[in-house]
Length: 602
Image (cartoon, rainbow, N blue to C red; front, side):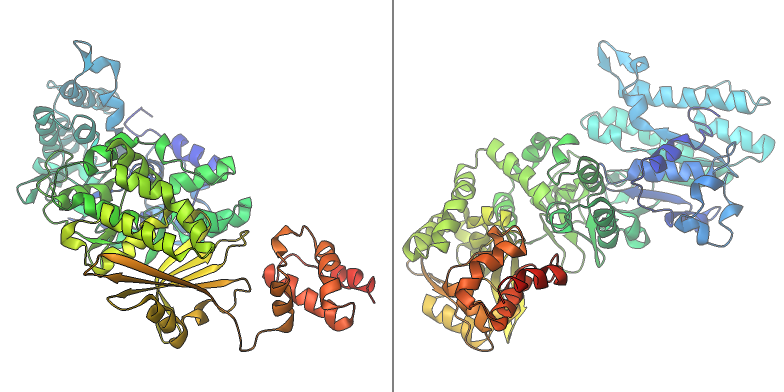
């Protein structure tokens, strides 16, 4: 075994030993199906820390000669496929990580890393191992890997699987070095186009960026590409899906709702995709927080969103407010310097994982709380002072809303709207909805915001659903233009929007906001919803008395305070039981405990 030629299976074994591996071996069915076909050239791109290297290690360990990987793959998804052993440990594998060569001390020139020297170093290193493995071959040109592989094939018939991890590292880290990029692309063309019909059994490239375009054509147009925008049949192997994350949460006692809030939001086909590195870090450390900054810096994001393209700033502000923005991804040239429009910037941010792309309506949005915090840090660096102020003031806006301060709410929304919306879009309905969600930015700490929630006989514009372990009321918001805030409240009632949250036993606030396009002013009405139909008596009693169940640590404490109110009768005990059960959503209260406590009051 060598470092690059047939490196064995130790790296994948280490992944499995972590105990946190999420089975993605079904991907091997895809690669097995294209071995020795014209579709054997594959490039899979996805953001940093989205499992690219783990997938490369899996492929290498499965195909690599000179080791026995049967124990590693036993019981994994691929082992259920007929004939999966036919390809296991049968082929010569060349497994490369371009980053290793770019940062090797052998490439230092004049005190700096020289990327062209890194490309030469890559070729020399692999050829050296080929000479040791295939003793009958000698390669007078030690810088021509393609010729060396072709010579081996002609002499012995041996073919190769070539796996290149971080294939695009030179384009990302040396993004202005066009000479080095062209030099590297020529190597890839020699490897995979000039002689590839002979010695390549499978070529698998993986990185952040798709293959560089020259004009409208890919530099390696014989490759099938699978990206964050067009993942095709490789969609199930991008990140973790919802069921996989739920399983990890159950096995490790992690709050799934928090995982969903922080790491979900990438929509691939019809799947919810989570950032796998952040999920694993959350499980490993037992804390759901941002791990994004451990893998990249907000300065990179800040540089891109600060580019002077018309409408880009408005777009970013709208997405901070939960909005979507249409994007044309077709003209992006798959590098980090050639930008001709804001669409090119947004497309790059999709590939970098800062945005998620909806293939059905061709829009982008910020996927989750972890990435949203990176945008906040980036706009502070860009000195978008008015946006930063709106976010800073949003906690006070929520408090004043809950206190029913209608005038303050209207005034602050006026300010956020005028400060963060361009003249061109000031009268756009989606702009108003984005303004509202931006103005209430910090409400996300205690609420899940849902826009266009199906409810009753229509769709509620925005609903704020309290997160678990908070006593905040539900907020049902209806927006109007050139009408009245009272009319917005009336529509919530008439169309039964509250039905969508009728199982919630806490308070519900109805909020109507109207925008007058002539005066460019907002008005606000806030009204507490009173249940009248089918409202259990015990809920009415407890809410009238201002009882807050979240302060109880056990059922006994709840009974002790509620019993004097509802009465020391069997019916009173039952009301208390129902009340506590409703708050706890039927969890964590043993019937024997209820009976034991209740016996004290009979």
